[in-house]
Image 1: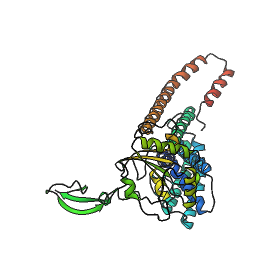
Image 2: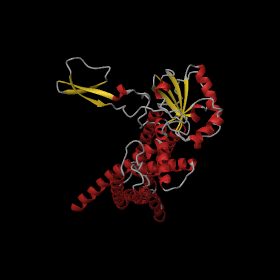
Image 3: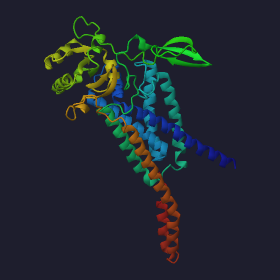
Image 4: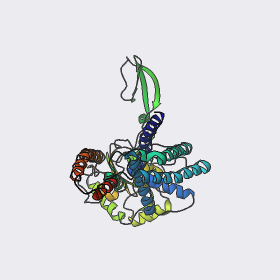
Length: 431
């Protein structure tokens, strides 16, 4: 009886660890796959600290691969697929990552490991503790994971893997070529890029024990009692722009007042921008002017690269300056486009995605698909649910099928019955 209870506790622990460990890998991998550019910048930050220059295409490949592999490992552990291979592979992965997190604690080259992309900022010490806990959990799974079957029968493991591969591949490609399919950053759609001081504060009032925040231009009636003035959630979200000349004066207000409609071009690192974009941006500028939309190009590069770009573009438009990290946070990509109305972001996209077709007459039309992530999640959920129904139906029919087979073999000679036994053995779960 005691042995049976102990075994039941072990089985419960296995299921719990599958959910916790698999879920952690899924969230970590998916958050980085969604915002692959953010992971690219983090990888390049690591290499820069080590004094190594890495090619942009290689960093994109590395970031994409690591994100996809981590997500798939989590999915396999979560659903109990490839029960032996998945936990051993994840254990090897965590051995490397735990060693790396120990280095981060000792050397402290960066303050944020980038483990969960822009979704959650995790410091170096919490990262090390998290990795140690995951490694210990994987050690238990290595010992006990095969004691309980997975969510799907073993013959469907490859189908689950293919579904997850397709899902995370679409998410990753969308993040690299268009924009993150979910925006974890501060500069979301609707953000005011040119917020003034009044946008930085909110006023807290209370009534009947209930506190609520109000904007300065929308204060409550006299039945509410004033409490305090606090910084609003948008206080970090203003864009400061400087002239791209020797003076370097701030020109944010001047740019913001140019037009109610604006096409903002982000060129954070001119060394990574293909020359083919020069003509495309000139065509976009002409189209914007015809549509009554101001055209603003901003870079984070230094004087030398700015002068080269001006020469290539025949100085067709001013090239303003701001912090490259700020530009990367606003819009992803080597060349990013942000359409702004009334100072607020309407849409944003990589230039490659925008220029995939002809420049539209209506520049305010969003070139991205904001509903794609919801559609992908619904499709994956339906596919996995249908797969489970098929799997359950197969298991229900299996005893009936083998029962009939056994009846047919009753009258066979004794020496042939070994064939049925060996056939049954091949159907057993060997994962």
